[in-house]
Image 1 (tube, rainbow, N blue to C red):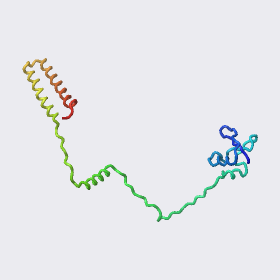
Image 2: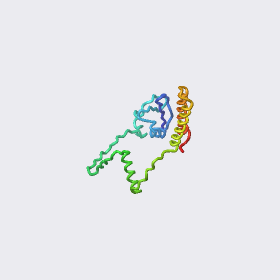
Image 3: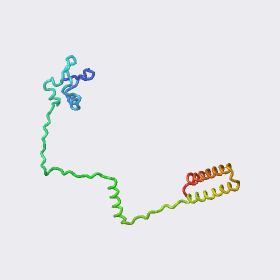
Image 4: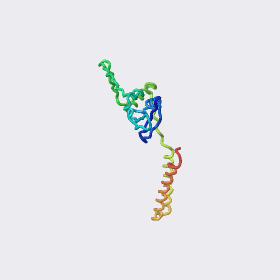
Length: 173
C-alpha cells in the first residue's frame, strides 16, 4: 500500500504518512484539493496533487461540470400576482368595531360623566372661610401698611398650603 505525505500550506511542514483511504477521507471533507502539495517520500520535493497522473480520479477530486436544464413554463402555468393592500391602524380599528357591533348589536355603553370631586368643593369652602377670617382680622386690627402686607402674605401661604394639602398630599376622596 502506497503512503503519501501532505505539505501543510501554512507552515510548509510535511504531515503524514497517509494511506490512500486517509487521503480519500481528507478529500471528502475538503481538506485535500487539486492544488494541495503532496509527495511520495519525505526527501522528494512536494508537487501539486493534480501533477500526479490518475491520483485525483482515484481520490474522487475530479472537477465536474454541472449541466442544468432550463425549464420552460407556459403562460397558463404562471402564478397570478396577488394585490396586497397596505395595512393601516384605521382599517384594523374599523374592522374591530364592526366585529364588536356584530357580537353586541348597536347597544352602546352609556358614557359615565365624571363628577367633580369633593376635594374641589372643600377647597373652595376653605378658601372662602380662610379669606374671610384674614380679611376680618385686617379690618379689625386697622388698615396700616404693615398689617396689610402681613395679611396678604398670610392669605398667599394659606392658599398655597391648602392647595398642596388637598391636591398633592391627600388622595382623591
